[in-house]
Every structure is written in structure tokens, then in C-alpha cells.
Picture 1 (cartoon, helix red, strand yellow):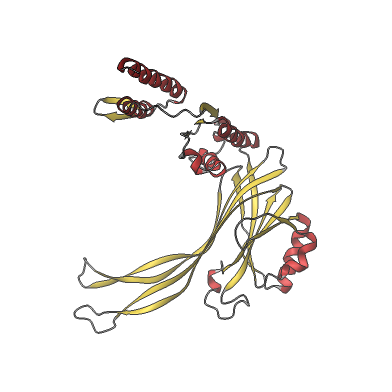
Picture 2 (cartoon, rainbow, N blue to C red):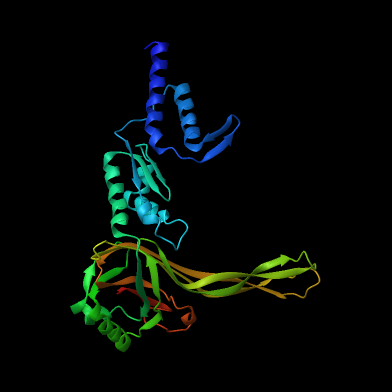
Length: 354
């Protein structure tokens, strides 16, 4: 191949890539030493400059451009400034992050009005399916009740097996079940009578369909973090640290348009300041020995994340496993549970309110 043919091939590659990018240009512009250009044009110019110098070509592995209009969903969501973030998170979660930064070049751009994708037909099908789930499900508001509970023994399963249907989980130590709404009072009664049921809270939350809801059941607990010079008055001062102890539940549900199926991501965060270790800090000049006491905290943390699908007219019961107590005021009480220390089995009951 002579120099003229090579130049022609690089030019054609540039033109074809420009043509490919054209449907996905965005209006945002940035300032450069050469004037103000659109962001997509700036990125394209960098890529074209690289290919022109190196003779490389943009890899073609069957990728195609597609654009999906999501305005019908996002414009009706009023409780967040970025309703499109839920769709972006769902795409990344269900396709996998590696799809967008792996061996096959791909691009994903999500705005309040559009999802733009450059990838293989197989990935396009996945993205289209996710987008359609949101468009067909609608952005209506739905009310949910959450019960965050603890029990002192996992033996309760034997007395409730007749009305619990097992659901699959992936996290080690976790379990889940589907049950009829009419069986919820019976479940609670059994847990109260025999298994030292403690209910952290029972909040009711209304959320736009497909958007995340956060149930924060934590309480701040302080400890003395350290001793620092006091620039205002001279000498030294102590500073406090803060640990949010308790349970935080993040719930992102998507109910199908026919109200039959719930597809939800459930995340649980438990943080406990179990105890603090006191240390007598060396005395600064002019102070008597041992006048400063600082504390080193022992923090126990637990994380859980699972995606569940179940019938919308049923309840979902999740055991996230044997965990630190999500009830901060019960910490540091000897013999609180036969499971050991302040360890309990943490249960989460999720019910859609009609």
C-alpha cells in the first residue's frame, strides 16, 4: 500500500466514524486553545488525530448506534433532579460494567431525555429491554412498608415452613421467602412468642416506580478521636469522631405495568460502634500526666445486596444472615443473644401497600 492509499484509507475511516457519531452529538461545548467546540467533536478530533498519526483504525466488531427516548418516564418523576440515574444504574448492573470498558469498544450516554448506545446488537437488545421496562412500567408513585426485625435464633424456620416459599439468593448466609399477605400476622406472632422478636422500625415510604428509596434507621454515636493543637487559644483540644450506628436500607423497585411483578434491588448496610478502647494520651508541656484520654473505636460492619423478583400481591421476607445488631441501643449488653454477643438474625419484610 502506497502513501496515497494509506492516507485515503485513514480519511475514509475518519469520515465513517464521524457519520457514526453524528446521531449522538451533544450540545455541551468546551473551550480549547483553538476555540469553542462541542464535547463530542472534541473527543472525535482527539481520536482522529491519533488514528491519523498511528495509522490505526477504530475497531469495528459489529457495533451499531441506537438512541432511546426516555422522556415519557423521566419527565414525570418529581422527587429527584436526576431520574435518569436509575436507568443508567440498571443498565450497568444488568449488562455488567466490563461490557463498556472491555475488548469490544462501546459507548453509553444517558441524559434526562435519551439513552444513546454504541455497541453490538446483543448488548443493544439488553439495553432496549431495560429501557422498555421503565417506559412500560410508568413513573407512578407506589407505597411500600418495611419491617426491619431481629430474632435470637434461626429455628423459627421450622414453625413457618408451611406458608413460606423459598426464593433464591446469592449472598453467603442469606435466605429469602415469598409469602401471602394473609400469613404476615401469623409470621410476626410466631417470632414474637418464641424467638425474642425485636422490631427496629416499620416505616412506610412512597416512591416513584423505578426510583430508589432510602430507609435510614441509624443513630449517631460519638467517640474521642484525638488531641490536636488549638490555634485559637493555644494549647491543645480534643476532637470527636462520629459513627452512624444502626441499619440503612436502600430499595429500588420496578413494578411492571400490569402490576403483576416486582423487580427490586435491595441493599442493607449495618454499622455498629461495638465498643471503644481508651488510651491515655502523652501529656503536652504544662499539663499533668494522663490528662488527655482518646478512644479507638471497634466498628462492626455488614453489607448485603441482592436483586429479587416476586409477585406484587405477595410479601418478600429476607434474612440477610447473622449480623451485628441493627438496633444501636442494644449494643454492649452481655448475653443479648444465644448467637453470641450482640449477634442476631436480621430479617427484612417488604410489603406493597394497596
